[in-house]
Image (cartoon, rainbow, N blue to C red; front, side):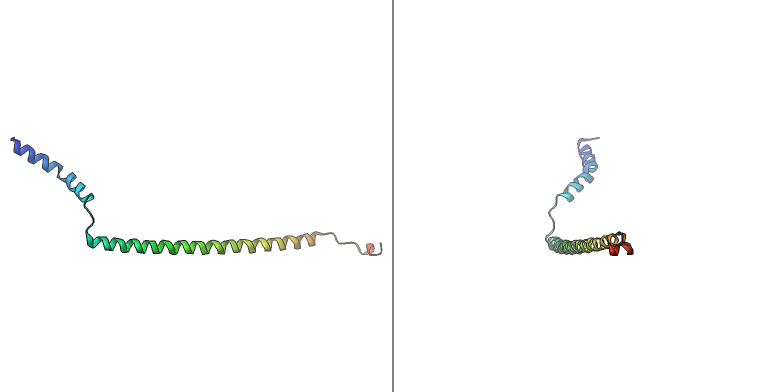
Length: 94
């Protein structure tokens, strides 16, 4: 095998790695840049909406917790009133 054949064989063996390297390090084509920016803008808009919705859900949740706590307090007071010993009828004259 001659010198040129060895170089040709080495180049053939390394070609997939060279193609992968050049594919990974090529700059984005200008026509894809605009599409990429549009996708990023859509993503940012979607994320902002999700954050706003999460904030609203959090407010609603805390409002529900507050309402629940108030109702529990009312029920506890009602239970205390039911459990309070009632005076006997004969103690009315004491």
